[in-house]
Length: 210
Image (cartoon, rainbow, N blue to C red):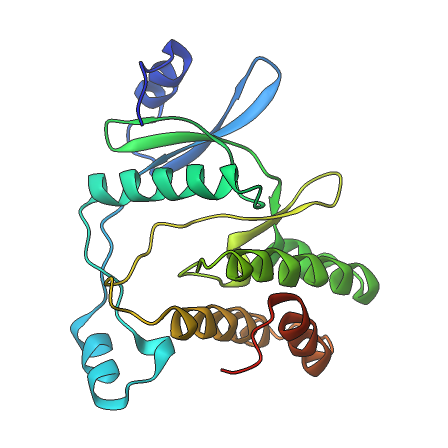
């Protein structure tokens, strides 16, 4: 659903014509304005999935920039109404949308955090992803860079522009989410108890039959 564009959003868009996503301060609060980006997978990616059938190689659905923005705004609104930890969209239209700030990206924060703090944040990440999965949803790009933490230590999930064909198996997409999260943590060499993290996910999500 789109509404008349607030003037302050229009001013921000005119001031940042080249940026795909940027923050803006308004009435003492911070917001993010995100323009749509085309989605899709490379041909070699799609070929790899056809040859192996591995869930984490499943190609992303192709969408134009405008379609991607509309899809993400609609999904964020639906998830927010369910009480899930995602940004609140306050306006959408014209191939972009505006949403409330949910804090700093966790990828960078984890690199600077001590082990105890990092493990606490990762428990919040697991709960956020598990909550999505308990509600029959998937993320699509669940790398650690797409989680945030605010000043009150609340963890949220961002960046929902990716989608898949309707016949895609939900459990396979949720497994893909879990794989992408763990792989992204291992790739940035984050130290944690991975077996415990996996056990926590299975307990909270109810997904034990991948």
